[in-house]
Image 1: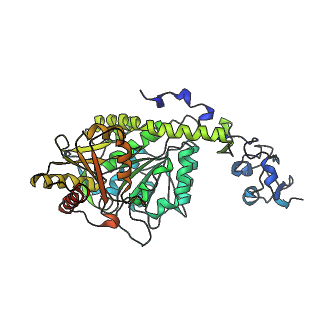
Image 2: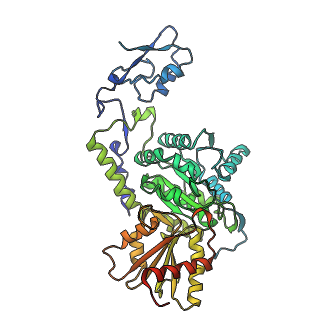
Image 3: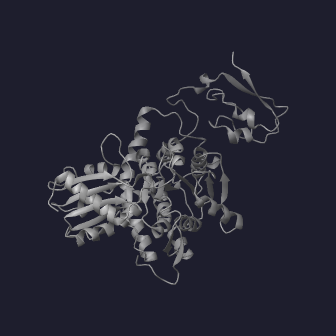
Length: 91
Length: 385
């Protein structure tokens, strides 16, 4: 038997999976130069922004954006099929 | 070459590879379809088109995208495959590190070909051997049977060790040359390699949203330490799962090192890939000339099977390493460095020397290799042979 046979060693911390947290990068929202702003009138709730967000900062269902960790990459604006997300310059 | 049954087929290394990938039934295949790609991806595309392989095939715009796509699919729980060669694997380099660090059991086939510059099309091992420290496991086939079998072995190993695994074989000499091989029966393949059952996957139900966040030093170093430790332990996984596959197929092609006439040898030739098969003929030629030679062919290159070499190389023997690559700045090749490291402090009277030959597709007939071995023996040790 080798040491790979035990699934017990493969708990959550075995793989580099994460949720948005204050890691080594701190509040990564401070990196942002442009902020995604959601227009709720145009939004149809398809959740494509949630699916594409590389940092997992958009909530499924409500599309609420966590600005503490959103880095402002703009993928959500690009992917939104109804142009409901617009990138605005940060003050 | 003990395989000769009514199931034996004559086919190219690339087709033998594609046939094995079909048996492994990956969910996602991503490949860059243009040069330096090989006919492996072409064959798989036609399997998907014909409906005999139920995979999603993603023709991407670069090798960097190919490995990125399969890494992401693997994180989502899929069994994945990609193939490349030469410059293509170099372009993948960044994500090769990422895949290993992410503990994603991707299987990649690399058809060994020379790298630029100057531009060259033909076989050598610089492309994948120079990816040595990416954390991937690497198996090198010496004939088309080994290519076929190692693909299944790679999947079993990768998914058990959770370390991505590469199967490498010689461009043109094997990839485009027809050789007899016995395809593994589908029931045996299913039994040996059931559908992937991931411990985790990047899925909303699991509650994790992102992959590989900016990680503090302590956690990062723990991840990397574990990869280092477990990639060394993966030697046992490769050995055990190889033995299991051999028992099912009767092919007897899985071992870390393939020995030939080594028991009573004074001189042992160490090499890798199809030239290692040729080296066995070189050993015969040298024996006809009164030089007691044998051959040890590297099949598992990453992790390096140091203990196996310690067992196979007795005190008092002299080892000639023939590398189809360069370890620039050392005067020799990469396997020469590896073997010296493996034997240092373990043997007191073993001599090791070597040279790099066959680079860029230079032909290596057995006679030429035998002459090269004699050149090394004379120039390194000035033995009376």
